[in-house]
Image (tube, rainbow, N blue to C red; front, top):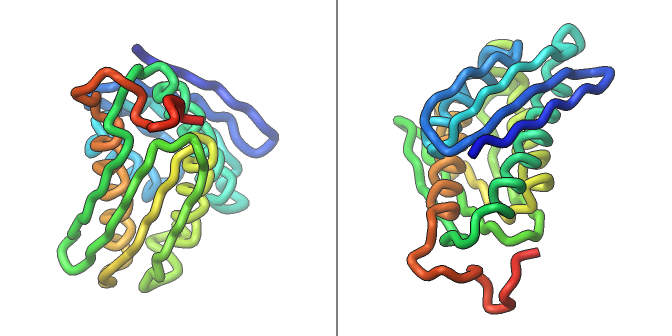
Amino acid sequence: MAYQINRETKETKISIEIAEGTTSHIQTGVGFLDHMLTLLSFHSGLSLNIDVDGDTWVDDHHTTEDIGIVLGQLLLKMIKDKPHFERYGTQYLPMDETLARAVVDISGRPYLHFNAQFSKEKVGTFDTELVEEFFRALVINARLTVHIDLLHQGNTHHEIEAIFKAFARAFKQAFTPSETARIPSSKGVIE
């Protein structure tokens, strides 16, 4: 089943469709972000069709944050429609000299712990501080608890790539159907 949201503000016009699968079409107007979202799609097992027209002449902030908002809203829809899933996922991911850890709880309680000191402030024209903005917007709107830590530094591109891949794989593990057909909470509900 595919889920889609179209969102338009004075800063961005965004269309995102998400489904379980492995294909993606991503055009954000921000080359480095396209690359990271392609990796997110591949490693999470989620097909992403993303088209964005954003005010990138200002900078990449609005585009990056707004994609996180819409993607989070779509993940929440997917989560609510899935009857049972593992709930927790953990991934350590090396990217050459770098190492990232992501821990995901599909908890219904939004919280982001983000501990990453990037080696440089930019990758190409992309401001590295926007990585945290993206994940904060996604986590709040998907109502996830997520801890992301950059454990070993190195090339800044590798640092960010390791984080995106680690998150994607941790989410995939957490969203995997559970063997027991029940809500993964002793409360009987995830809110």
